[in-house]
Image: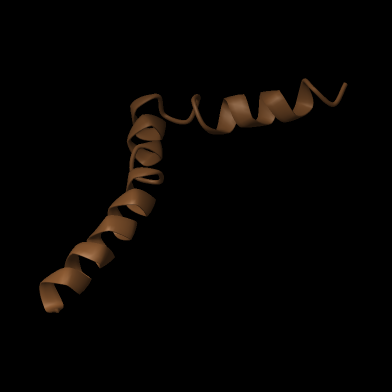
Length: 48
């Protein structure tokens, strides 16, 4: 039962970790141009 729970726990954890994990590396790779810049530009561009 323990291995089953560990695998199930690892599945959701990995899925959730995959989303935030790739984001930090990219942000560090491009400093902060990929996440913050596009986000702000996309929010300001569509508004006006």
